[in-house]
Length: 244
Image (cartoon, rainbow, N blue to C red):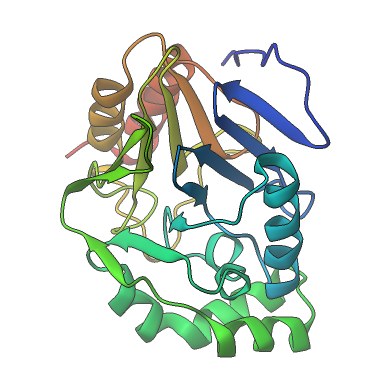
C-alpha cells in the first residue's frame, strides 16, 4: 500500500494539510490529533493519552492558532484518543451517539488498557478519574459551524474499529478526512473486543464516498494517505474478516 507524501513542512511538529487544517503525530503510540480553525472556533480532533499529554496539546494549539480549543471531536473511545480531554475545560465535546454510555461502562477497562500499553499507573488513574464524557452526541451526522464559512461535518459512517466510530470531514481544497482508527497506516488495523469487523469494509466504502478520490485521509496512527490506500485497506479487511 502506498501513502501520500505530505508536501508542507511541519511547523514545530504540525503538518499543515490545508488552509486552517493541521495534524500532529504524538510520540506515544504515534497517535494523530487534528486541528481545524474557523473564524470563531478551534476544533481539536482527539486529545491524546493522558491529562498531561492533553495539557501539552492545549499549549501547542494555542501557539499554532493563537486561540484556545473551543470544540473537541472524539473519533472513538479508546484511551489514547480520549484521556487528554480533561485538559480542555470549557470545550464542547462531541462523540458518536453511543460513546457516552461506552465510556461510562468501560472506564475501568480503559485504565487497565492504558497501563498495559505503558502508561504509568498513577497517570492512567488520574486520566480515568478526570475523564470528560461527550456532552454533544452525534446521531448519524451533524454540521459544526466554526465561523467564517468554516463548517465541519461529523459523521458516524458505520461500525468498524469500534461500534461508535466518528469521522471529521473538512471541506476545501483538498478535502481532509480525519478517520480515527477506521484507517491505520503505521500498522495493521486493530480489531479489539469492541470492533465490528464484518461491517468494517462497508464503513470504509462510505468513508470514501464522504471524502472522494482527491481527499487527504488522516489515519488514527501513521502518515496521511490517499483514497487508493483506504480502498486497499478496505479490501484487506474484507479478506481478513469477510464483509457483511
